[in-house]
Length: 142
Image 1: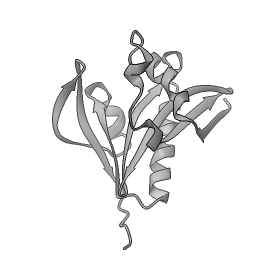
Image 2: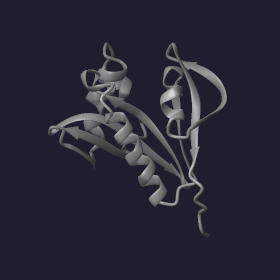
Image 3: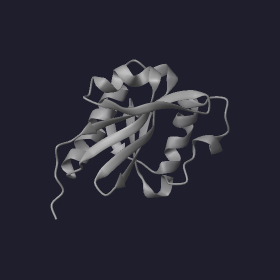
């Protein structure tokens, strides 16, 4: 299985975001106003863009959003590879932590990487979420 992860243009994330998260929605639903300010990574499997994630830095605290794998490729480890990649990426940049708003159905996935739930769950667009974070033990110098 030939897999490659690289930084991509944010426009390339939209199709996979929609197909994986909101397949019946218009593309506008998966476009973030902050997309131009983020870093976007794509996982290519057999030269096909298969999984995407968007990363946003706020003073050494990174939020990842719209983490998605095309439906036919889910369960094959691509999400694990991509999440490990962005965790390593943020560690190399002396980030303090990385976090996301996770669907409740994905809590078990994130806990395998050391993420912990913070605060109460909340509902957005009829989907239940909870904030999950991973402390990276990096201290920003300054």
